[in-house]
Length: 171
Image (cartoon, rainbow, N blue to C red):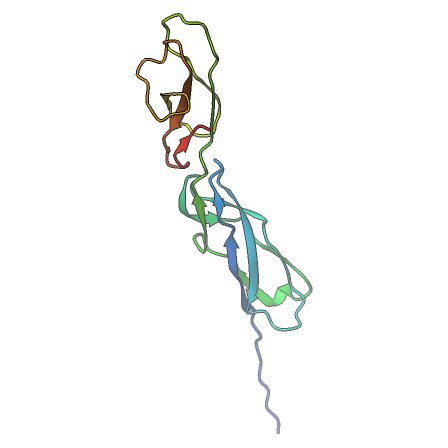
């Protein structure tokens, strides 16, 4: 006598784990770099190759810790048919966006006495906050209230942080 049985071989779950987003400094964008990734559940010797997106989207562009979404990972190879691939869930990948160093460059032109205040101007800055100015007797830390009399003055501009930048003082 002999017996007969039916055997069912079903697909094995396959995931990619240890995907990370490269932490970065604030740049006004939600785009972040994706790094890493290893298979969990792949049988040794199987021909399966992932195509992992190189970038993802943080939920916000501002400074903080944010969830990152990525496009679907694609699999290729002869043995892909043997797996039930599980895409990473939103929130498995996180990114930390840190404050950008504030930058401020100001200018101020020399002039002849006219009883008008010195008028400094912004040449370049990367913050969105307003710039305030302080005036000092040249080479000292003595603040001057009326920077329009004859003399030499040092002008310093200040821009406060707006959340994504560190506080900055002009050079």
